[in-house]
Image 1 (cartoon, rainbow, N blue to C red):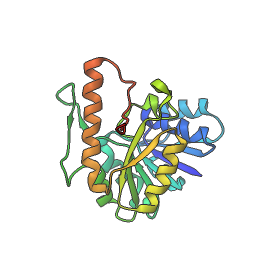
Image 2 (cartoon, helix red, strand yellow):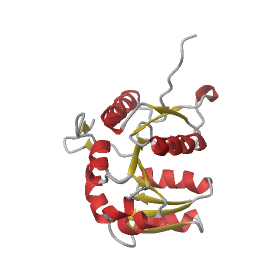
Image 3 (cartoon, rainbow, N blue to C red):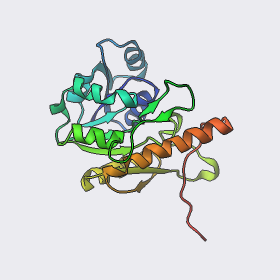
Image 4 (tube, rainbow, N blue to C red):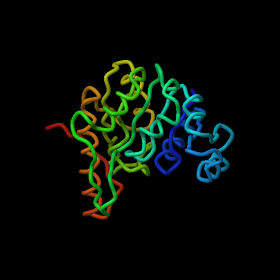
Length: 216
């Protein structure tokens, strides 16, 4: 499978490394051709990787990933070309965080105007699934968690088939998928990211993940 990732930062690269480990081809997309971060990563990552613009990555991928800064993602989508997303599974791993007033950041958007819902409205023919937004990128791929447990990875989206494919990918990445409903649940997943951030800042420990534990 060919995976096009919009973004070139640590989140994008960590996901790309996971897809590469599973045998897929990956292109990282940036605003400008020849982005230094993409070029450096691609050179080190091997033969199945490349870098390009947002439009090139979106055209390249059979599966697409939105991994840009959350509040900048709508512009990145426009730069990529809306037609390149049609009928494709699109993983939205973004969180619309506002760092303009320092830390902790503020969460932008409310129910109805979350990043996931906004992106789905921009891309009505795409099959968007919100996921991989509630844990740090260092744990994305087959993390080793205390007690050997598999962490839970939440997802939501309107297309049942897209969510099934996403759940399979989540399992391959070493997580247990937890479906919480339609794309209108995105706000609650984005707010869950804030829970993770606030806890991590309070405890100075970013290597934590969520797990729903059933009663005995």
